Length: 235
Image (cartoon, rainbow, N blue to C red):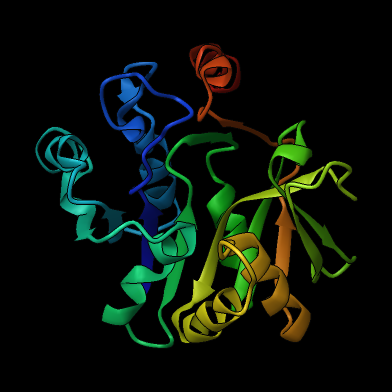
């Protein structure tokens, strides 16, 4: 079975004060998280976990009562434990051969059909790679000619490639190993570093989304251009 997983428990401190959860930031008449939900549905993923925190009642209220996608959503309320936990939390309710499709709720990207390319690539861990124009701000991913991941560098000053991941899928069965690799890190466990360690040990893949664009609205300067970004790419 295919499931979606959206980590939506963050405080959004970079974007505050906006007075509400960052996932509800309006962009062209809709909450920014709904762009990701729409794209998951386009790929045939119709059961989507929203992994959030108990103080984000505005997000839960909106998605469960006002969003046109409300019938496709399942809510997991948890303590804040970082991005990795936010993505893999649904695994405890699923089978090992189920697939979790994930993405970030404060990003908007094109083409809207990019998840289809991720779905088509076989592998226990597959990332969808976008050209953001600013790879140093994200996790840059180096692949070979067969899409095999060679390295994932987390926010390095001089990345080896322009390609950064924004979406992906993973088999539920690899979640314990990802968690183990994250816990083995010193300092704050990072999802990108855990994926890097996993890809070194086990074949993992990155699919380049050609002619792509991706905007993270997590900072005010990017949020200010979000509506124009959508207007320019949704033609």
